[in-house]
Image 1 (tube, rainbow, N blue to C red):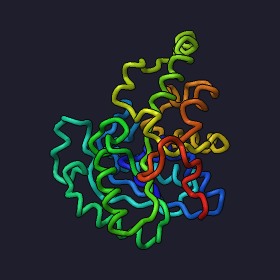
Image 2 (image 1 turned 180 degrees about the vertical axis):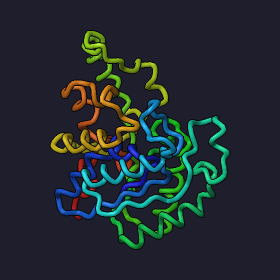
Image 3 (image 1 turned 180 degrees about the horizontal axis):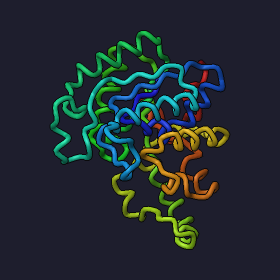
Image 4 (image 1 turned 60 degrees about the vertical axis):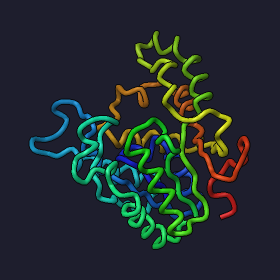
Length: 260
């Protein structure tokens, strides 16, 4: 089971391991805390009176099918927006949800599925988004309540990403592709020394990118994710990184489903 904050997070963070697990015969379950109500969308993208959340739910169903998820559940909370914005305090926002309440909902699904593995985010929510931080808190507690044996905290390998940005910056400038500066990594992910699992998902990058493309309201064809050349995409997304308590130091696992 893989637990995420908003539609499209699943393919960016864990699309590779989802498709890998599916192709290796495991049951894959996707749970999303919110419907991404406060995402940004280009003018004119939605039909008149079409709410963004409805489109994002449809996109998530399409992406889930591509990635091999056999069950998709939304916990029913509202997107909390970025940290420090008024959306944080709206009624029903995931950020303000009592952890025990939300964890009980997730734990019920974990028990129904008899899940062996749960993925959440690291304690900083990968990049400090309130809903991502809440996924960590709720997911870790839900695993305790349900007795889920393996919990992997999805993260970004900051050292690996920094090397990639340096390598591809010149080529990106020549192609007119805007890439974030190295300074933006200060709030992203964890250093390599804190990461305990690295899963090579290069054989499943086609499915991962196709799932990103399914989230057209958030990931346009002109976006960095879809515009970057294949070798840059492989560097950025060809390995999915995790932290598992009690493992390490260093990379000690290369498959979150090993032995199952």
